[in-house]
Amino acid sequence: MPDPIKVDIPHKLGREAAKAKLGGGIGKLAEMIPGGGTTAHHWEGDTLHFTVTAMGQSIVSRCDVGDASVHVEVDLPPLLALFGGKVRDKLLQVAPKLLK
View 1 (cartoon, rainbow, N blue to C red):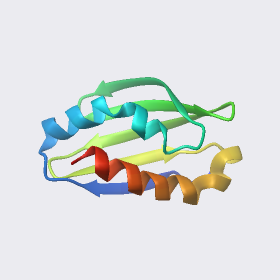
View 2: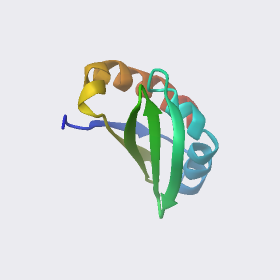
View 3: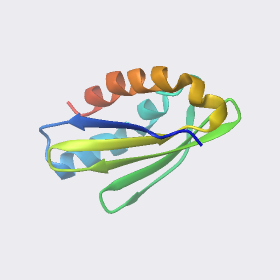
């Protein structure tokens, strides 16, 4: 299994406001995977767990929300690991917009 994509996104919203923004924008997070769609999501405390399906593959992801940043990890299956750089770039583009 390839290493997960890990990204830290700073924000100035505070923990609860950042959680609300992420929860309302879960569909946009799924767009970070080309052709992806969210199939499931749930909160465990300050961690948003969500699964995106793309090209017949399930991508397990999580966002750990802190007071000043969100730590995102995306576990790409081997078939989609080839797109890891594009997924990381898209994540860095999409996630900060959700937290404004």
